[in-house]
Image (cartoon, rainbow, N blue to C red):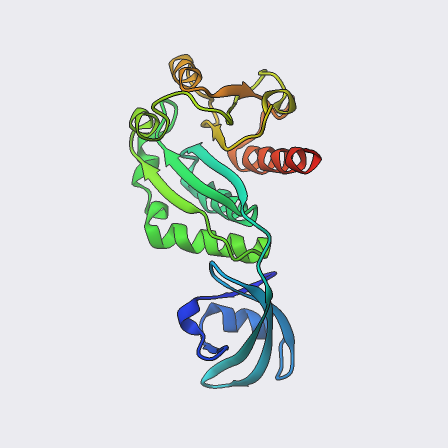
Length: 238
């Protein structure tokens, strides 16, 4: 945990008392005591410091002092073919650590149909994964997360007509730095078996430009982090 996150409703005149997993982490991992100062933020709001006021059976009491706004969200939406449920949490955490705006999880031809019935897609589970990622990335931003049973329905709803800034990760395509052009706003990453040809053609019709992040063929969790890292670097270089 690189940033202690609290809900706005948990603060009363800048103070809160924690009794859940965050209190366990503060005690057992960070070893805080009264007077300790830690990095702290309010979900969707300011970032700052938290001073430990007390630690007793009623919980850990802290006082939050804002130091300003967090770094802005990464202006990227991720369209992601549903990965294996056992790696989904790591993927969501990585996306939240990068502070991207939105994640659309979707079915695809090479996605096992049972994946979309996984309990790991429960809203509470996804929200916790995102929160853990934000704590790791030290951001107060959380991505919107949406789950779609049908890829075509998602494309028809959000990408009915061609638009700029749409990238489609695909092996052996031109490198991402050549495809970005004027900037990226959406990145589509397929299942580990890849998009089928019909899906590729449909994406292209909607203005998605195929690109690759290099020669290695990566698992979903590695591909997501590698692609977002490259986009972040390219944006800084711009």
